[in-house]
Amino acid sequence: MPQVHVRLFAGLHDLVGKRDLVLDLPAGATIGLLRERLGEEYPVVQPFLATLVCAVDEEYVPSGHLLRDGDDVALIPPISGGAA
Amino acid sequence: MPQVHVRLFAGLHDLVGKRDLVLDLPAGATIGLLRERLGEEYPVVQPFLATLVCAVDEEYVPSGHLLRDGDDVALIPPISGGAA
Amino acid sequence: MFAITREPLDPMPLVESVRRDECGAVVLFYGVVRNENRGRSVRYLEYDAYEPMALKKLRAVADEVRAKFPVTGVGVLHRIGRLEVGETSLLVAVSAGHRREAFEACHYAVDRIKETVPIWKKEVWEDGSEWIEGHVPEVPGAG
Amino acid sequence: MFAITREPLDPMPLVESVRRDECGAVVLFYGVVRNENRGRSVRYLEYDAYEPMALKKLRAVADEVRAKFPVTGVGVLHRIGRLEVGETSLLVAVSAGHRREAFEACHYAVDRIKETVPIWKKEVWEDGSEWIEGHVPEVPGAG
Image 1 (tube, rainbow over the protein chains, first blue to last red):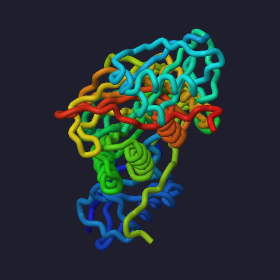
Image 2: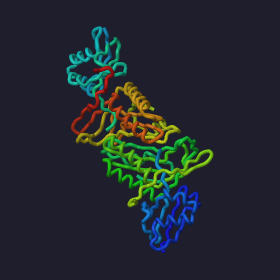
Image 3: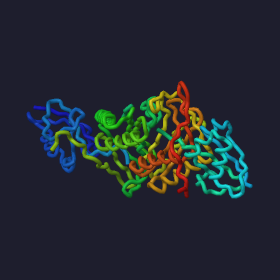
């Protein structure tokens, strides 16, 4: 039963009103499942899911990535740092 | 009878040992004639003439440019300012 | 030198950190807060970042630049938090033997920072604000 | 800001002179004295210039850049006299709305300075020295 720590930034942080969440997921859960759960538990996040990318341990990971207990998952909306 | 003031830079300055020269030229003299005269009066300058460009009043001028009395003529060997 | 910081950026130590005795050229890029974007007047910007990952990705961009161009040094500073018009959000410094490589590598680094580093910008106008959606980062192994 | 000077170059006032509230990017180029050129170890460089004409030609390069690229500001400082390894001989700053124009215009400006501005460089090695012959400037109206 992986429990994962989820980090929110930028617009997601504003919408959800939190910087961090904890999600309990079933064994064998992937990033794909985490995204579904997020959409269910936080409907405000739903419109963001199409362009949202996730990072685990500070690396971008695909939807099939398997989550382990204690993982640190960052939700990365389209980035806009850098310069004009 | 134009008398012109000639400025020397870089390698020409080192070779001739002067920063400035005064040349008396016949009426109707051009930059081309000035170059010939320089080669005669200062043989050390001869090897530089092929790649030497002249400037009058701070603008590059062609060989046919007519000189007037009091002109300020700079001898410009190939330039190498700027950067790597 | 690589940093994500809330303090104003100082270009001089960054340039000194990339200069080498064998380099003939340094190119320093400043990303600056403009007073206008897409037709709207900007009051100020607010930058958010996933700081440890952003720092790691800045270093990864530098590794990519060093692998791709014959450069002698690369450094990046990115400021976050609230920035006023005219302030510098990004500094990228690249040194190389010759100018062409320095220009090309620095331009490439700025492009890659925009594509890969988890930093976000909110534009604040007189009558509202918006988090700007830019690049969706590439995910390794994704379809 | 344009200058030919024997003093060390200060990049900060130059960058401030080209920055505008509508610019999102500034590119600053440093030409730096290298410790080696064409296989020979360089002790120091000596720059000579036809100063008033060089200043005029720096301004002409900036006019050319402004006519060719959508930039918001251009400035150039060139140092002359004796320069040690690691010292800066040239600073070119260009500001623009976006980064691409700033990079391209700054690179173009550095190229044109090398082609048109009457400044000369002497390399001094352990065992001799030589005035470097670079570009023959184009003469308007010449065959």
